[in-house]
Length: 153
Image (cartoon, rainbow, N blue to C red; front, side):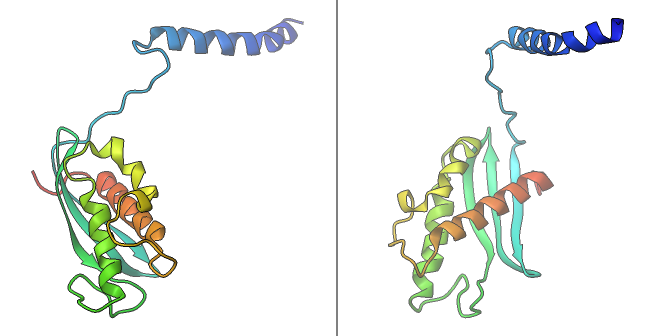
């Protein structure tokens, strides 16, 4: 009998504990983000066993102060960081545009905007270039870097 009453009161106890938790938060319901440490980070995106995107960025008080690619290769070995021929040159430029968009901005606030490269990249976003897929590789590389922690101070 006691167990039955306790079981019936579980939803109430759960709701009450949530209310108490929210009441104890200074900002009622918003979750503050902890800023990553200041320093230089490195991360990469691998696909089918090969590195496609490897980048490095520096954070100061959560703001990206520098960002660059260390390695950039696609399924077609003809496109890489120093390519001069089209259409690969435009693809590489889209990578640069997307990464450079973050420089001078708070990383945690603006990283999600890379999901919409059509609002960011300066070169034309078309079916060939698949800029959305590329920006996702940058996002994955940045998350990898943050998960690894500071590379150098």
